Amino acid sequence: MPDPDIPEIKRASLADDLLEALETPVLILDGNGALLRLNRAGEALTGYTLDEVTGRPIWEFLIADDEIETVRRQFLGCRAGNGPVNNTHFWIARDGRKRLMRCRHTAHRTDAGETGYVLVIATDITDQRVTEEKLTKSRSFLQSIIDASPVAVITINQEGIILSFSRQAEVTFGGKAEDVIGRNINILMPEPDRSRHDGYLGRYLETGEARIIGQARSLNAMRLNGEIFPAVLHVSEFQNGENIFVGFIEDVTDQRAAERQLSETQAQLHHTGRLGAMGEMATTIAHELNQPLTAASSLMGAAQLTLEKNTDERSARAIDLLEDSVSEIRRASDIIRQMRDFVRKRKTAPSLYDINQVVTEASTIALIGAEAEGISVTKNLQPDLPISMIDRIQIQQVVTNLIRNAIDAMTASAERHLTIATGYRDGMIEITVEDTGPGIDGAILPKLFEPFLTTKETGMGIGLSISKSIVDAHQGKLSAINKNTRGCIFTVSLPAGTRNGLSSQ
Ligand SMILES: Nc1ncnc2c1ncn2[C@@H]1O[C@H](COP(=O)(O)OP(=O)(O)O)[C@@H](O)[C@H]1O
Ligand SMILES: [Mg+2]
Image: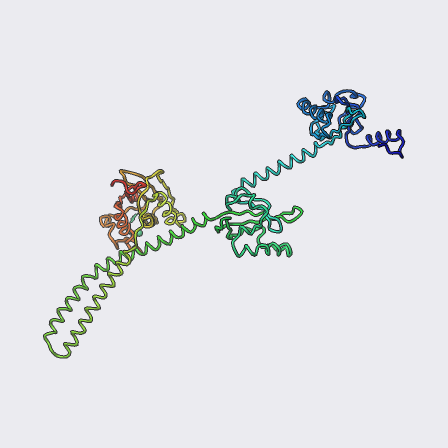
């Protein structure tokens, strides 16, 4: 209804003034899409003047070729009375530049019900779209970096609520991002941190005193299934309206296990080495002492018999003393035997092993300090060796002994080169340790594997004898030869096994 206070003529010019004052491009089209009116903002944006384009359908000059169909269909839909139509499409300006426009079409009818005109109010969203695209791009760029990170990346807000959870975080903690986002980060911590974490955050926000930000810290983390694992955590902070914390979490379970295994192996080697040495020594001592002890006890028996012929009190006393002596001697023999049995009784634990790995582990330990002594090392480990049924610790002890001997032998040599190799020959796996020392002394060569034979001032002379008994127990062979040039080669041969056990020997 016309407003009674504003005369008709004024209404027309008011609408006109409004249209021209608008910063937004406005088009008025007739029922066929021909242009009736273009306001000043429309002229500025398209580069056309009203006079130039009046009466021309907009798809002839304003709409990009590939969008004409769609825009026309929407225009017709609007004209048919389907209500206002919003769409987004490009306008091609007079100079050929494209602008992305969001347009709202409204059809206005005459009193007779025909389409009088269609009003198009257009908003230029080109710049907005570019910014959005840039933002999406840089977001997905950042996301792809985060997702490529080999450590878990988690962001939380200052209440400890999880905001993002990287792909590696999903792997490390065993859960989907959508299941943890929005929950408190403390679900990924075991006690006592779990109950204290909110307090840690609160204290930091209050005092600004950083206890963990900016430094790597080793701690325990917890997977969603409750499994606790060792981790290294690094936290950074940034501002995004509020405090955001980014945590980088590395699962160091495997690392820790490897470290532990190395030190266990070291300790075990040390222990078996000593036990083996004691065993050999006890055997020899038992053997050496057995004879004199047996002789002593039979001599005492004879003395007793002799004394029994006398009936005086002193002889009776001497017989008692001799009896006590015999039982003391028996006790001594028993102690020696028990000691020998005890050290001998370490249960062997044969299992199928990759010899290359066993050799690598043993040499890592045996070669500690070798470089400092000017020794260079070559390792020729033949790949794809068959596995072997061995007691890993014992074979490592053998390899360690051979390497240590080789290092000892080269202390006075000008050339100090050690070669550790593995190979496969005639159904046997071979480990060889070769040095450039003086070679084995001709005088000891025939008795090389006998115990207590040494040419070293501080040597015990039991390394090779223990090694030989270990290799023998494996149905293998330990041998040594002097090279023609200088140095010698020790070879350990061990039967090759299959996954089902030992192969035919
Ligand atoms: N690689 C080697 N080169 C030269 N001699 C060696 C080598 N390995 C062992 N021997 C000789 O064998 C001896 C016995 O070795 P071993 O049983 O290990 O006892 P130890 O090392 O305590 O002397 C050594 O003292 C040394 O004379
Ligand atoms: Mg030795």
